[in-house]
Image (cartoon, rainbow, N blue to C red):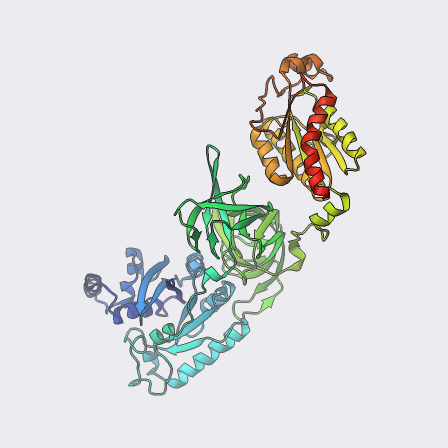
Length: 606
């Protein structure tokens, strides 16, 4: 079943926008009788003529002031087709509401008073509709009764409208002359007063609009909102913005690059989900994903960038200048952004770009933003849901924009043209990470060094990462608190992943005391390339060995957050290799590791 066509209606204040909508509803019998009677009684008591606009305006303040402040959405059914009419504010002070209401529209109707003509606010609204990428725009030339239904006056306004749209680089709109209060050419034709007009009524023009874009046919985009953990179960929650998601689909997530297969759709317990469905899914692999990750099918990869070029509609009362910083939101991604450059500013009177170094409230400009983290997204013209964003300042929306194509900004998601298979064939083995974990003094470094020598002698490309060569460089800025230990392991995992992608068998020797950090490392590296080795030794034996006198220093208070004493160690529950080094000689322990690794290496050589 096709969704309702969303039509935003906008116009300069007092040009009759809400009256046009009220007439559409009234003349098609879609106004409740009690609502009609209430408006009639209110107008009579105040000594004014019947206001069709009040059939729509919901706020008492609006009825008193005669303006639309908030965005109102009403359903409308005509000629067997469903619509959602979005009444957006016309007053300049309520631009933010107008932009918000129009941002989700499939089409737009702009209303202009034939007497007053194209005010700056109307010109700004044309620019906004273009900025939002609304594919189809109709222009209603209203109040034709005030110019005695003059064809000359209508053609004059039509010419001005077409010139404005050409200046904005937009397709020419269809224009429809109407007398909204009288109901002329809204639903019923007006050949009696406008015999010169041969075009459709407004209702007919709306019926002729193309259907809404079927977002099921657009590539899958599934932005994560959150991850819920129930015991060992992880549910990845979000809304399908486009495409179709099915059980059994292989998904990749950016910016992390992790991937797995959809095991179930929890929310509906259905085998698939479509655009607009808010769902939870489980995956075959317990990936460590964060809010803002963008899920997609491998056949349609989004862009990843730390810098974007965008058209921005500025809403804040203070000026936008180069160097200003904001919170940045795109789909469910939340980052920090800084204005890197203001490339041009749109002149609202001519709708042409001109040089500028700031944006004022209600203005549109082309800017470049730098982001503090990689952003997964699409160009706006490809996918609106993942190609639009807002800037937040002091917890309020300061501006909204669309992401444009800019080849300077995008990071490649392909690390090399040499495939994993080619590296395996070249080295005779694929890249692996042998992750050893255990208490200080358990023998991790001793075993990994001996294993490195054994593998190297077999012709295996191998290397050891341990605390000495990582803490002195890459992680020299980190201490030993729980948070810093977790970050240390994350960095090690990312480095080990790169080594493994190059075809190296990486051996690590880190305490990595927390199960969640080890699981995260496994996820970063990939479950098919991760071998966990638990170097298990009682703490009493470890303290007897104490080659670096760390236990002694910890008991004397010289070393804080010491694992096994003042900081916890979470034992692996199901390691690939479990070595009791208080009962095994180093050579025996290495033999055990080789027994596990040799079938893998042998398989890779075949």
